[in-house]
Image 1 (cartoon, rainbow, N blue to C red):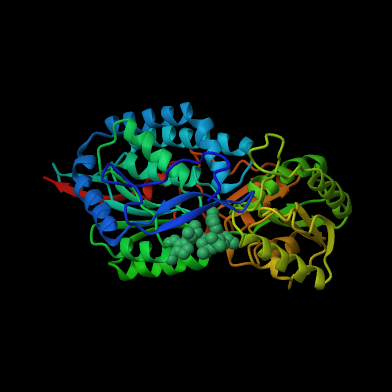
Image 2 (image 1 turned 180 degrees about the vertical axis):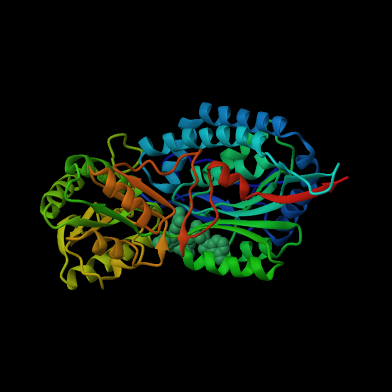
Length: 481
Ligand code: NAD
């Protein structure tokens, strides 16, 4: 293992205790900018997993009984600690995930904001009184935390995604065992550390690592676990949803894949659309489930849009995320580079034109150039499978109905975008798109206070907003007379 930058020790966090290697299986954590091992991650043993579930189950009663007001104080204090520590946490996120430091440090701040907002929203999980049919009776609807939750988070947003799940679970009175991606484990451990330093009782939050399939099978089947929350691919989500159903019809929230269409209408402000979408496309090297991917551009403005977009994409500086001048880092793991190469080669072979990039960015690390493919036929793999990388693809359209049909063609329905100056077109697009989120003339679709989630095979349930709290609550009706 080459220690080029200090990355720090990685541990399990179980029942308030930090557990190191001590005889456990160890997995290397790789810096995607160099391909070098930078850290050693201990895997949880079956006994560790059992201990984590036992702690979360045991602590649920007391944590649920604590007032939402007091739970919020702890979570908000952790948010402040994350802000104080953001530079160092962000630096370590660059080392294991690869994104530029200019994205990593803000991600820690956004994670802290999510903790703040959600902590406060936990104090507003109101019930209601239903007018009773019986004189003198009270019909009360109250909402209670579902119980101990098992969470599984991916490698693309190691701060924001765990922050959403942890804060909503804890703010509503649930406890949690979370398994972050083994490839990017440092940030969630720092969220756990901040919560512990803020006074979180032992066992309320537990962090475990291991072989994803083994850990999820164990946790989902565990008696004490009442709910599953997963962010990742549709294939894995389907598998986990089946496990959750078989394990006792356990509740589940599934944030799965996307293949976001972008509709550029004839009357769009093209320069604005290029500015917004280049940033959105290449952020985190395109490894974003809401990344704009299929650009359907009106035939009359297609070439202008594509030329401007390709020019801006080619001008992006790619490099090691620790270099503050890097605008796009490497892909997060070695699997993504051949995946991009396969998709680009397939599209080109079917007639797509390469307008920018199209190749690996360097022999060292997992870089791939910001890429634009124009006039990509519908049967190309990339028009159907989520690229999850820095590749934008374009196709032409001439009529509203035609573009809506194309946009809704895939089984995904997570994010979608449109650019138009017409308020009538904007309203029609918002109604017609089959998607959980629609950004019209902007890409502001992921905030702590708004629901984030998909339809069709992009999953079910929301995170963020009041809907994100619902995911951790069950409803009880009490009839009192
Ligand atoms: P993958 O499908 O094997 O893994 C996706 C995520 O799921 C990873 O974090 C992984 O640790 C986890 N995972 C895999 N099997 C699991 C299991 N049995 N139990 C619990 N967790 C499990 O593939 P990958 O190569 O890591 O990523 C490829 C694809 O995953 C991407 O193309 C993209 O479609 C999807 N993905 C989506 C998101 C998202 O934010 N929705 C994030 C990361 C990856």
